[in-house]
Image (tube, rainbow, N blue to C red; front, side, top):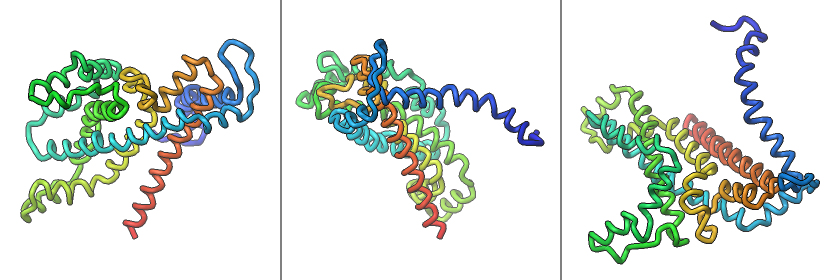
Length: 292
């Protein structure tokens, strides 16, 4: 039943709007206000103006966190979105794949902390399964301190993220493939197109909207990434896996710099917002070019 007037519509929207204002808008405004002060959480806040923001732009560790998260997003676009798309293409072209779907989706349902602890044990250089397998198959020279080496730590975390979320994106693409008109696929099959050609030239172009959503989720999720980094390496070694969220937590809870941490939180939020808006704008322009 549709509301007959604006007051009825506002009445229906009020509960959701109140929760949004309380849980999102109010904390954001409070964080924005704190970002202009120097405060350790106990003493009286001291007005700092834009000093916290100036400090953030000069903070080399904070700047490097965005480089790390950019690498993380680029790698996870391959090991999460692309791999999920390939898995969805395989599953959608086969029958009786229920067990395979459940198996690939199970990691998504596990708590991130459990996954981080599990993979930390797998990567362990002394008793980890990965190094043991390499030794058993005659590749002992490839054994490594995976999370302790600055050259492999970030990539190791990216691979864990791919193991978890490729199943999530697979589910998105499987749902998108299931909505495609069967007549188009059957016609292509009758014309002699193979499974790979149908997947690449018909299925993938017809789910561009779902692909855009998946990429956007990967980008925004990458900026917000925290659990795996914090539990597996805590930003180490030598800050090579430090991401904005882990650096923010250290600044606030370890260093007690709530004012500076608030400024970092505002900047991280703005970066995520502009990244999402930039991607959506690029997608809109690309869609307009295709229509014309």
